Each structure stands twice: as C-alpha cells, then as structure tokens.
Length: 71
Image (tube, rainbow, N blue to C red):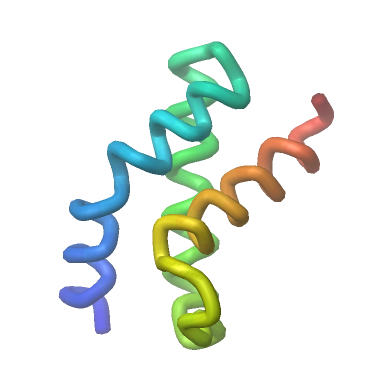
C-alpha cells in the first residue's frame, strides 16, 4: 500500500501543489497544504471510491484544508 501511495504522491504532487499555490498565493503555505493533503490522503486512501479522478479527490482535500486553515 505504501508503495502504491508513493506512486500516487509522485504522480500528483505537482498538480496538488499548483492548485494549493493558486489558492494561497504563498509558496510556503502552498507547500504546507500539499504536505497536509498527502498526509490526509494517505490516511483516507481506502475511502477513495473512484467516483472522480484521483487528482480531483486530492484537490478537494487541499481545498478542504485551505478553507479550514483560518482563511
């Protein structure tokens, strides 16, 4: 499972970071949100049902983190 998640992380890290950066307009905060997204996704990967693209699911997690970040 970890190896599979590492592949997902490598494949989508840049997309999630770009999305987080577009939300935050701050590189450090974008990186923080991307890392937190990865952590939350790892914990919840078994809940991914494939009803949307994986990239969309990850960006939804990033958006949730951003909106609950106190902004």
